[in-house]
Length: 502
Image (cartoon, rainbow, N blue to C red; front, side):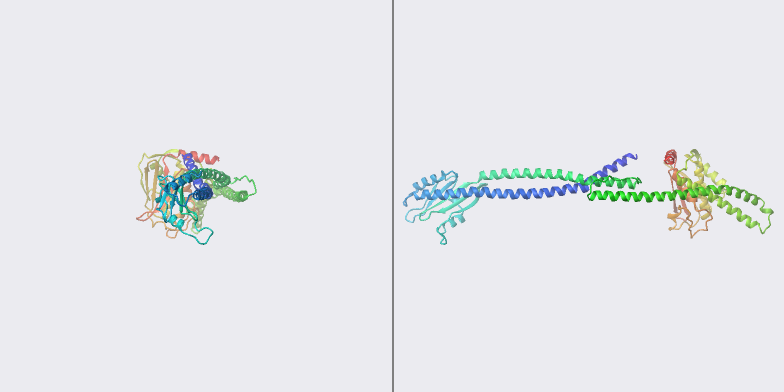
């Protein structure tokens, strides 16, 4: 079950890496390439379009002007419509492949219009603006009449139409040239430029991917190293290659990791020394404490025979000796938890019998109300469960007063034991600290004579079972400590064994 979430996290982190910086780089590269390619293609298209149209236009208009002059120069001034038709057909035989119409403007003869092909080019096709410009006489040049042209569209097909009035003559000529071939050429050019733009876009995406991989690979390695460092692998280092900013970043990371590892090693050594000191001190105290305890037991037995002035002092020595002995035992237990050497010795336990035995051994039967059904069997460490119950019930009796209510129940595969006292409850500012070591600050309860380690040891014993202890105030008053343990702590015992070996 632990591998699947890790695989999902790795897949999710890979997706996030692709969606974030890598995709942004590819998009930026693609947009730059697209704008550049479209700009270049657009400029190339318009330049080629103008060049093609201008070349065709100039060639056609120049040929029309020269042909019109040659043809009309051979016409007599009294030429009739039939002769104009012949002249129009001769004009249309030009290599530029345009259609022609010629209009006669003689004042003493009827107006005549000749066509090279009336089906393709009629007088009605000539725009009024072009006709007006052609007929207008200019006085500012060597020639009173000029050649004018215009691009038009007829039936969705582009055309070039031009016209000129013959100087000194009585005729006006118009030509109509189809630009459909040029349009096809320009469409082919546009299609080619579109393909080139698409290819450049694809190339830019591939280039962006390569560039992104080049940039992001060191960043990804840095991210993996940072995650490994965060997981506690302080010997993680990056391979430094090159002299660029990424290499400098890798060197900085390595220096930081080295200093962090050194500092953590120093702190670990100090912590180990502190633990050794506490463990050694507790161990060394056990021998004199055993002797002192034996002496105090003798003094306690002889207390009735002692001088009344001496008896209170003896009783104080006895009580403080027991308290000191408990403190030494608790310190040794804490050092075992800190060192990871605490182990579970599992056995099948009837919870009701275990709680009853704990209460009876400490003479609390009159002060504790037990709500537990017999036959509720669990597999736990009996000694550690007894330590947990003794601390919770003793704490409730000491600070909350009797009667203390102990309720036992099963919730699925989880054992739940609630210990509720009859006191004023725990102040809200104290609740987050009740399980802290040596924390005894309590304004609403009587002064504690304990070591300040009982509840923290209870929490550690619950944790090694794979369980928890929580503290809260009941709505009707009083503090409630809830112990939750697995019904079978075998898996927790194996985990504790592996942790101890590690």
